[in-house]
Amino acid sequence: MKLSSWGRLSDDNYPATVLSREIGNQQLTPSDNGETSIVYGMGRSYGDVCLNPGGGVYLSNGLDRLCSFDATSGELICEAGVLLKDIQTLFSAKGWMLPVTPGTQYVTVGGAVANDVHGKNHHSHGCFSSHINWIRLARTDREDFVCSPTKEASWFNATTGGLGLTGIIKEVSLNLRRVSSCWLDTETLTYSSLAEFSQISKDSEDDWEYTVSWIDCNSRKHNRGIFIRANHSQSGAESTPTKSRLRVPLVPPLSLVNRMTLTAFNQAYFLSQKQKSGMGKSHYQSYFYPLDGILDWNRMYGPKGFYQYQLVVPYESGMPAIKAILHEIAVSGQGSFLSVLKTFGDAPSPGLLSFPMEGLTLALDFPNRGDITLQLFRRIDAIVAEAGGRLYPAKDARMPAELFTAGYPHLPEFLLYRDPGLSSGFSKRVMGW
Ligand SMILES: Cc1cc2nc3c(=O)[nH]c(=O)nc-3n(C[C@H](O)[C@H](O)[C@H](O)COP(=O)(O)OP(=O)(O)OC[C@H]3O[C@@H](n4cnc5c(N)ncnc54)[C@H](O)[C@@H]3O)c2cc1C
Image 1: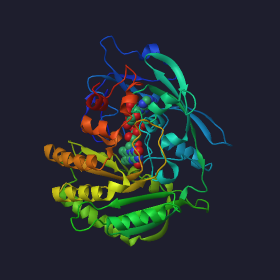
Image 2: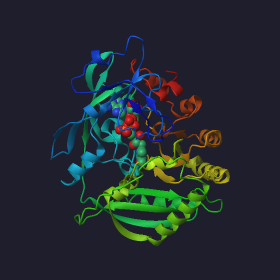
Image 3: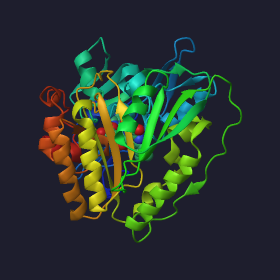
Image 4: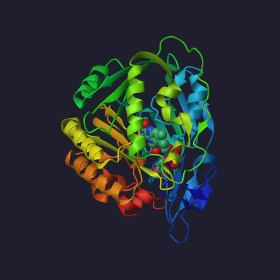
């Protein structure tokens, strides 16, 4: 089966096995030639955590059942291939939603656990794994078992954010939360420096559940951006937004994202958002998932695909590092289309390899221009390392092993929990197998 991840940097053929509830560890045992596999959810990771060149893949779309829901406590038990989109659509109509959601809803529950995803409310609600009661895990060397923050807790900590390498997540129990409305009261503000961004972030933390900002990384003059904060509305829903039918229909022969379009886009986006400054109302779908409005938008980067680069740096060393990185990018002329700057709060992540830590996180998209892009990344890597930061494996396709090892101090402990039958392009690159 031909598969690629969201960055479309490669497109390989894999032997694929569809997972089901009934599949046991015997059927998961790796082939005689020692080839390993990795679970592929929706392939919404940008790089190679869900790919396995030279090996096989397990497809989680066979694990698609909602098993039970407790309308008093909000506990939802479901299989790992269920989409966040289906949970949001079904339960938001009843006043329940996911407590943490990433910027796309085309993600499986298993993928959300394995990357321990974060959302725009990290400062108030932590990571996805903070809301999980238990996980049913299947391994190639052991019968299915359940792990939780209190039972087999070390397996739980290795599996949340464990990049699919500790076993196959079959079933998950998670807590949904009650919300007053599917609509959000928003406030849009502009900022023209990182100091201003920092002040707005601080001022927003206590009173606003969701915060996010877009930053113009093409300008050498300013670090200007748009900050949007939001809370669930107290008033009930009005209408539901009409569904978008926009789609990038094909892969253009060349990337549509280049220096000229980037500058024009960033300028136009800044001005259009500036006009919207002030209070507003937004449906959760457009506030949480603005990019889902255009299906297959990743095709616009053309046949060579694109990289995403997401970093986090601690507060103390953070601002100078972010400033230096933005400068490197502006000077290189390889600016990013959609650059997101936000803060992570101090909620600890249970996952040994969870990405979030208290500090500043910046996510950037770059068209793949080959060596020139990789050279830029090496310069940014050095700034991240110097600042004591790390990169997000879910977004990565090229980080060197040393940067990963330096950024994830629990790696040696994590390695004790790896499943011998599972590996990915990412694990081979940064862990050796
Ligand atoms: C537009 C966009 C916006 C995004 N915004 C955010 C964001 O705001 N925050 C954030 O944290 N992430 C974000 N992401 C990244 C995305 O949320 C993660 O990469 C997510 O894990 C993808 O889930 P998936 O189902 O597509 O899994 P895949 O990408 O297919 O796989 C991801 C990992 O999960 C493992 N996995 C999947 N299913 C299982 C299973 N059943 N058992 C064991 N392992 C499994 C895979 O092996 C792999 O290691 C965004 C991605 C896109 C495209």
